[in-house]
Image (cartoon, rainbow, N blue to C red; front, side, top):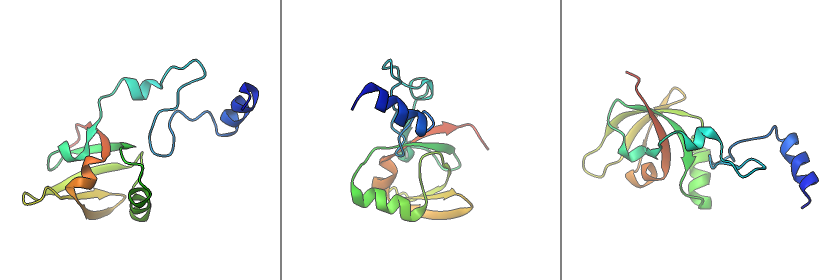
Length: 119
């Protein structure tokens, strides 16, 4: 693809800094977005009960995982609160978009969040 075509597509899309899964898109000069380089993200599974975080990136590109996230309407940019962690299997009750669901510990390992200090 020519650089001109690449610039036109970028312009048409509104110069996105992240792809739909939260992965950074480098600028034309190769520099990653500051929102990606300035923050530490960790797996949702590392959060504690009562903590809130912003869903930043998906660490699994498998079709089945992406379809499940879509079914849940859970995607990067969503604010998530951890309501409970089940000691037995580390599954989590999370709240987002005015609903509460349970997810497996395995799933929580694949959702990268930026933890917030919100009570």
